[in-house]
Image (cartoon, rainbow, N blue to C red):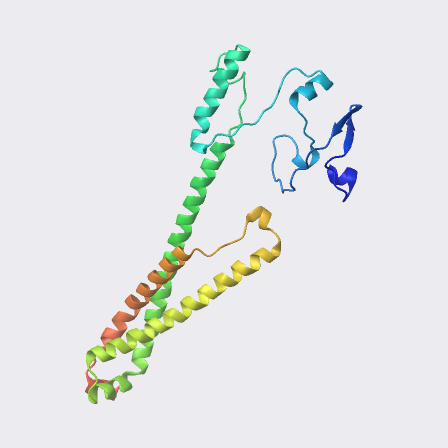
Length: 248
């Protein structure tokens, strides 16, 4: 309203007429994005003291008011207290749900909290299964690597390489492959988090952020998956008979 009436000029301190009565503007609301409201957007409303409004319009009764409990967990108790207070003042039965209609948005937020917690758990389970599938893929790759390097393994063992050395070599290769895949995944995640804010949808959907605790847990699970996936091919490689391996 301030922009429509005064343009870019400051509105505070100026006078407007409402119903033929002058009103001094003492403040302008901060601009905000509203995707819902109780009856209309705040940007199209002006506010004045209730006593002044009743004196100008002759309105005696309030048909809608908004209250907010300190904590969403207190919403039900506060609603019952409001209902009991109004019941005493207006003489109706506080148990009569038709006498006073209450829109409790806190119940919706409780539902959303449970929904998003379930959604996060679902994504976590999907992510774990994805890592398991990736570990199976790494294990298959290492099996192929061992088969293709049989002669090399046989020569190393014939020259004195111990089983532990062969085992550590292939485990190290597995961890490196897994680490490279994980680094690429983290790089893609950081790129997405940096790109999404440029789309201009922050007010509606927010900006994605990297949770370092989740990232650390993911790295730990990824490392354990890589070690487990590479252990069995590496163990098979370390147990090869040098003579047989050099003939393959």
